[in-house]
Length: 279
Image 1 (cartoon, one colour):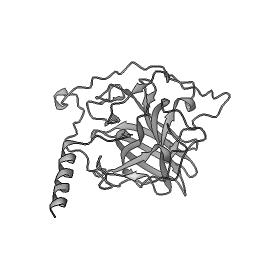
Image 2 (cartoon, one colour; image 1 turned 120 degrees about the vertical axis):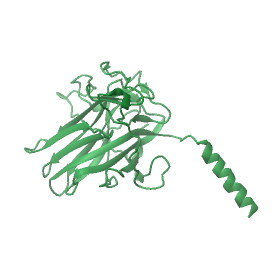
Image 3 (cartoon, one colour; image 1 turned 30 degrees about the horizontal axis):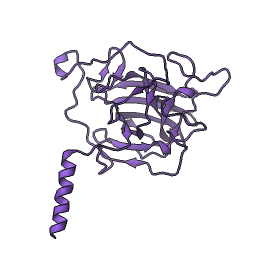
Image 4 (cartoon, helix red, strand yellow; image 1 turned 90 degrees about the horizontal axis):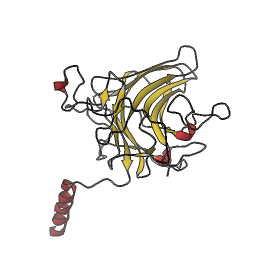
């Protein structure tokens, strides 16, 4: 279950192995083009089946926690939809500006297979965007946190900070469809659990920072049950002044409670043990 924000370390890892703070962009990343032969496998996930949220019967992730990488298998630009080619979970992308004159927000998926948020945040304001789950609520009880890669593709975060938020059913307004359970006529909505003080994003899009955030780093007035997750979003807040920035976000997943050990790890461990015994 997501817990109240506790004093924990927010990790920065390279890939899944945790040996550094940046990771080189995948050279083999296929690019979506009209010529379908470029893509090894065509996008095959649902694009129109947007379901009402039923957190009593949530969707489930594959054990590795993969959400999406925006590859040509997992992004259909004509429909504006992402998916997970592993399990068929799917959704859309969005962005939102602050409420100050001059604030702006735009979103897209780039040809390199990454989600881009282009934001202008006025002094004292905010802006952001993210991914909406459209296949139902997600059950994340088998996971311990959120991981994603991030880089500044253009502009700068100078004068601003950024955070990641877990979008929850109980804090999403009842409209538009698919709506949550928060009635804006009687309640204050959008109080999503958020994690701040994140590592600074890389300024090299070819070497994005991979950020691993445990659920215990998220804070909110009311934390949700683990079956109420309906999206993830990133928000840029003015701290000391305005900023204009394009964030590159990719390789989104939930962190498994226990990572599977691959065959190489076991063999390496046995070799190390044998070497230690003979020394």
